[in-house]
Length: 307
Image (cartoon, rainbow, N blue to C red; front, side, top):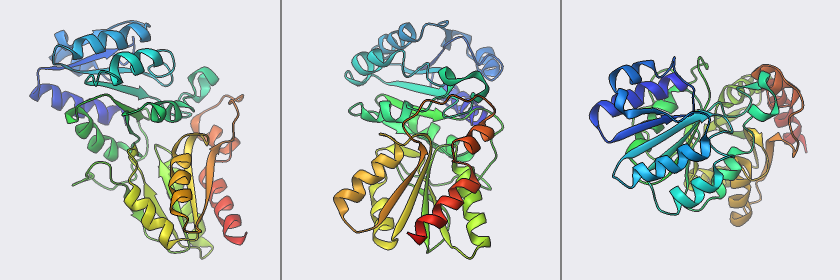
């Protein structure tokens, strides 16, 4: 996803000289080509997230589109006041880019596990949140984000994530969800890079004769409420999966709508259950530990259908 983001950004910077990228002292390998081609539009602000977000807000007032790029929690939690007060409130054209959402930096410990970012950013009024599920979705939403005025949040994985879509996501329109697999027994709704596990769970369920529809939501806010309403009307069980706390994030957004619709469809959220991650390890290992890998999702879906 990170590499797909960098490719799209380079294309957009070539077409629009008002685009500026600020990095928090990282990404020099991925961003090397951008630095070589546009040295006066890539700023290394150092490890100073609050300062770089305020800098972005200031640059945006001069008519520039400014992207702030850093690891996991660091462009979100530390500069939260600057994002809220300096950027979103003033409708500044600033894009906050998190590389490493969820357990991507799993071996570096809790400080690097971005597991509350979606809840925090979603709660800020007028904030737009993009949550692509694979590199193809990343390309689609990055184009949309750069041309969409106002402050946005983009949650990425890192590099070398598996591709779920066989080719480019063509014709995607903001903020539409994408159905990747048909099914009639249960719907698995996925947000972000955990999409691979949702697809894996559907394969496992199919081996047991259970038909699962898989829907990816590359945009968390605004939520594609039309698709969620259609699913609520046509399924009696829905599961949401997110590499994130279940409080306030994707699953909560779906449950809020389900409660308002009152269709009788039950929703189960899969994610972190109000806990800090106390284990370190690679991403897949942590998914297994915290019950959100493909096998665990399939097991929970099967049990949910039997309730």
